[in-house]
Amino acid sequence: MPRLTFEDFKPGTAMTYGRYAVTLDEIRAYASEYDPQPMHLDAVAAQRSLLGGLAASGWHSCCMMMRMLTDSFLINTSCMGAPGVDEVRWLKPVYPGDVLTVRHTVLSSKVSQSKPDRGFVSFHFEMLNQNGDVVLDQRNAIMFGLRDHGGQA
Amino acid sequence: MPRLTFEDFKPGTAMTYGRYAVTLDEIRAYASEYDPQPMHLDAVAAQRSLLGGLAASGWHSCCMMMRMLTDSFLINTSCMGAPGVDEVRWLKPVYPGDVLTVRHTVLSSKVSQSKPDRGFVSFHFEMLNQNGDVVLDQRNAIMFGLRDHGGQA
Image (tube, rainbow over all chains, first blue to last red; front, side):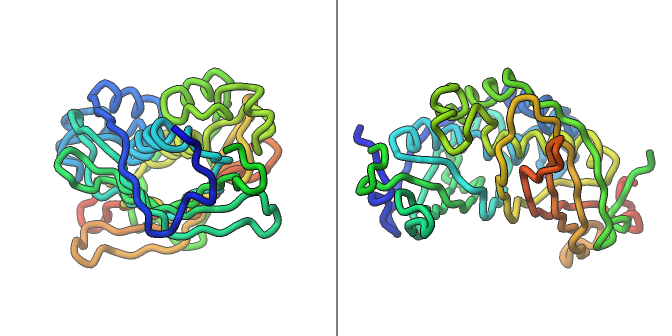
C-alpha cells in the first residue's frame, strides 16, 4: 500500500476502516489500570449508572479508536504526531461484544508557516458500532510530512 | 474524606493531587496495545521523531491523568460520568522516569436544565512533570449529583 503524505488529504474526502471486537476482559483490564471507577468494574454499580451496564471508560474508547487509526491508516502515512485533540463526544456506551469501525472525513488542511516541510490536517473521526450507531465523535488535527519537501513518502 | 457534590465546585477554586511515576515498560505496554507507532516503541525511531526519544503516546498521557483523577479526586465525589472532552493539548513529551501530578481549576458550573438532580462542572486540568513543566493541558466538563437533590454525597 502506498504511503500517503500531506498532499493526499483533500477536504471532504472520507475513509472507513478498522474492526475492533470489544471484550469484557479488556474493558475491566483497561479500567483497572486507568479508570477504576466502580461503573467500569462492577456489574451492579454499572447497572445503576447512566451506562446501564458494564461499559468501556470513555478514554478507553478513544484508545480503541487510536489503535484502529494506527493499524489501518497512520502506519501508511507520513504522520509526524499530533498537537492534541479539539473535541471528543462520548455519544453512546461501548459494551462487551460490540464490534467497532472508524469513519473519518478531512475537514481542512494547511502547511505549517514556520516549517514548510510539514502541514496539519484536521479530521472528523466517528467510531461506529455494529448497529451503525456513532459511539464516539472526535475532531483533531494530525501533522504529516509533505511529499514535495522530502516527506517520508 | 467527605464526598464532594456539585455544590462544592466553585469557579476559580483549584486543587493539586496525584503522583504518577512513568516507566519505560508502561510506555511500551500501552503503545503495544493502543498506539503501536514506531516512535512510541522503538528507540531509534523515537530519537528521529519530534519526541526526541522514547516517550508516551499522547493518549497514554491522558490515561495517566485519568488514573490520578479517579484515585485522588473523583472517587470522593458524586461523579456521574462525563459527556466528552473539550480540548487536549500535548505540550511536552512524557518520558520514562517522569513523575507527574495534576492541578485543576474550576472554570464554571451549571445545573442541568432537563434533570435538576445533577449539574455540569467545567474544569481546566494541567498535568505537570517533576520540573514543573505542564505536559498536558485539558478542558472538560464532568457531571456531578447535587447534594440538595439527593446526590450520593
